[in-house]
Image 1: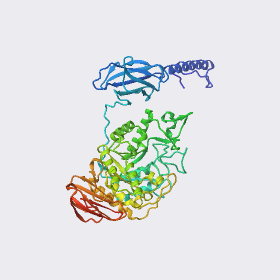
Image 2: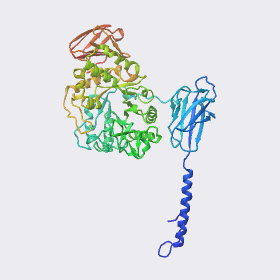
Image 3: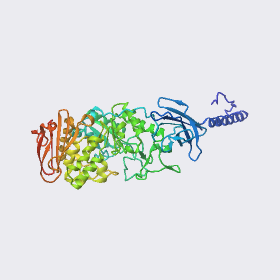
Image 4: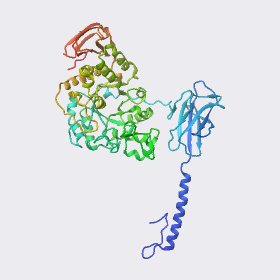
Length: 577
């Protein structure tokens, strides 16, 4: 084989001439030394930091910077340029750095911007760029003046209810046939009326640290593969295609905060939060997973790439994002922007406490506070006053166009806190009517539609036994009520909620109105029949269909309601059968 264009001299028996061999060895050694040291000398051993500073409005002070490395002396750096954001300073260290502190100041500290020191740790390939606003402590890793597109609810989700599929427990099918079993039940789910199918994680599960014999589906070992327990990529795609053909949209569960302990990404130690002696440490609470490091740009890019993979390869229609509050909002913003460029997607956040992620990354989140209120109401037997804050929250606190996913059970609640019958008892039907009619997208967890009264195991195979139940038609009718009445639709497509305090505190009454469509909900919070007189006003008066009977009924501005024990009634301007 020629070496750099030089053909070695060969003897008659095919071996190297010894003098030539010595010469080649010397040449190769010299080249290795030269190229090796050249390579080392050219390696990136410097770090460049760029800081963009936007002084507060009207401020004309002559600002500069004080920079330092941990445990090192600081030094002055001047702003030497300007851009559309403000002043720009650039400094190149003659060595690699990963953490620096800085202060924006005037002169010899005659004035300082902000009350605390700022820091920079978002180094990528040795370099970092940040943006700072005068008087604002936050150090931005992207230009905050660039407006991130707000998520928009796809038109197909405006009237939709959602159904959660726990793939492992959905059927007693043999390992490898779980997707096929879900596909076989699509006609039944179509008859139920739900429009969005949420599949719990379908990815392979880590073996290291596994809980139980099968493990948690939230301990992912490979974001771009399919759990063989459930089936193959082909059978998963067949399920999604069949769902689309029957009018469903399908969203996947996405676990972005952490991975399983033997995930294929663990070869990249710097992609994880905590590494001790070269070993990635598990989350202190969830001992089968390890937290990801969102300061690593390569990991963030790989995460978005994996999310795009399922949209492009299988054709899914969105994501339910697990523990989304454990992931920086700016990541979700970046992911949402790239994903929505492929096609309109429904993005659901599990985070129910922080509405900031609804501003630019998600269109819906979990209605955890509603669930907590309903559990407390069933436990304490409260009256209508207890629901003022509940309804006010969904009416006033959500950013425009966003809304909660409402529910009385899901995979977490069922397995860890008990079935809805354990927690709500005789309130199950009444509170189902409530969560289907207040603002939000209602969820049905598999088995709920047959009145399942059993906690499903989380780490073992524990399939549902499907039986006939009156609860199936109960939920089918609620889904139809939701679908047929625009006042009950999701987000801006639906109407606002208004609570009325009548003559009887034991009766909860509220309305939803959208244009000419009106819905009046009356719920008895006790185990005895109740009568209530409510001043609805002209806005809620008119001719309605009674939900329980389908009979036309006229409601007046001061309306008397008689509600059976443990019961409810709904009046709507559209007939629901």
